[in-house]
Image (cartoon, rainbow, N blue to C red):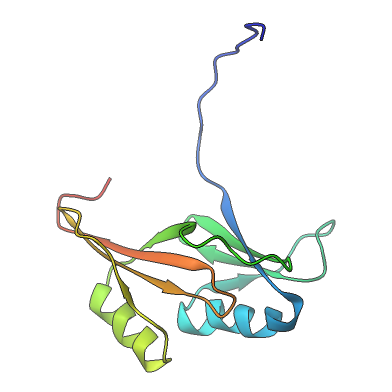
Length: 130
C-alpha cells in the first residue's frame, strides 16, 4: 500500500441508514415518526422513492428497503433530554425496552423498530455530555 495520505478532518456525522423489508416499510416509517417523534423530511430528487428520511437533531436517519435482517448487535444511539419520557412513550406504544449495561455518567437502554433495527436511547448526567 502506498502512502498517499492527505490531511483531513471529519466534520460531522451526517446520517445513519437502517433497513426494512418492503412489507414492513409503512410500519417502520410510522414507528420513527410516531414512536420516536422524529420529523419526516422530504427526500431529495435522485433518491429512491421507497423508504424515508427523518431529522434527528442535527443529523438524519434514513430508512431503506433491504430484505436482509439487521445484525443482532448493530445499532445507532440517540441522545434525549427526557429519558423517563421516552421510556413512557415507548412503553405506551408497546415497544420492548432492553436494559443495557451501566456506563458511568449516562442512562441508556435499547429498543427495536418493527424491522428489528436496534436503537440505543441515551441521556447523559449533568456535565457528562460530550
